[in-house]
Image (cartoon, rainbow, N blue to C red; front, side, top):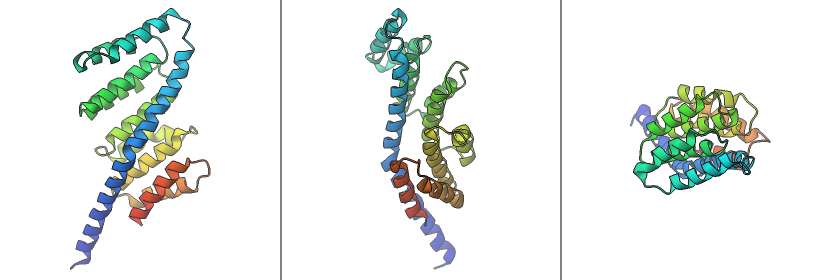
Length: 210
């Protein structure tokens, strides 16, 4: 049996193990991302709580999410078009979520990219949209594409930096850029500010590739 064949089998096994880990952690990571959006957007909503425009959008959003699937997207678009901080943000992520549930990740990413392109959207929400889009594209986009999407977050100082680093490392592993991914994962493990959950996942990724 040739060494080349053995290496090919080993690489295939590693890819399957990494895929299993991502399947295990993926939904958890997405849940964290969405949770952060809701918390941050909720703070903006709270600041509008005494205004009539807030009350109008609260009713509109509540009505939208109670509609059937064929009507909800249009109703959410109306909420997104409002000027009320918070609800248009949550509605955008809800619309992207619906696209994912409909097995249309391309549409979901397009919704998020349109949101990111808006000059009026605060950077914190753009960061979250880029994180969410990167998660959706992880199985299909190139490592260069994921690095480009998350470059500002990687080089920034927000708490999203660690999750962005993990996602880029996964993209690099998918692309066979093992050494680059290993360096990022080791840096995460050694960073005292990185969340324990991300360090734990990084250790498990490393255990597969080493």
